Length: 293
View (cartoon, rainbow, N blue to C red):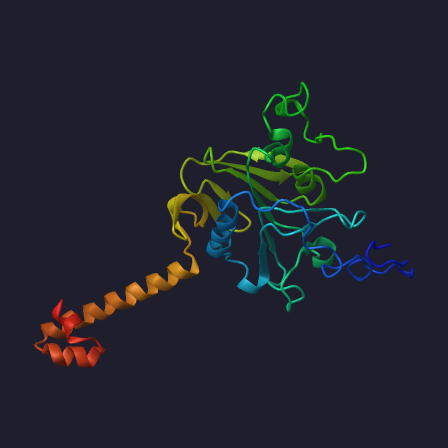
């Protein structure tokens, strides 16, 4: 019985699929009053950079969705349980919900696809939940170090309460690629779902630090300025470590290339003996621009 409908769903034989009987994103809350907001501006800007530099060779732009700080509903038996990944990618689904609407949340039983990549940005208050048994602080669990837990162990939760993020990504959603990034340590960690659990994978010292073979894309650390702020950012790249550009960077690069081609054409025309006025008129430049050559 979906908790938001107030009445039992009529039973049929065969049973109707969850997409038809369970709550949709229109029924489930997209935010909870009193829930803490983003801890800093980095948690707002970094997801934007990830989404704006993402380029997938095997998918068109209308075949994948990225979300950040969006309610992710994952358990058909507990429809109100959700997590809010800092950033995630789902592939093989429309960019818009049902191809027509902005998503208020991501409801796995409606979408039919779990996230393919999840990235969490570590902070002191969330580090233990984000890293689960890979959290190496000795007092994370009384007397137990993270490395002493077996792959199927989970951090205990009070009975009837939702599991921790790491457990949801590993045991419920089985997200193929789970990554964490500590901005303070400038440390990227990569957990790949192999068999029935996450196994931490080595990270390269040079970019791409992580290569996702099935998506044919790399992830690395980029020292640069984004939206006016200089920092060390996570950014997508190709196999050689060349950074993928944002939309604004692509526009600026195209404009610079066009300007360079125009100036080269002006030089070539001047070399033929044409006057400055003739070259300016032919190429649509000002005489001042041509004079600068």
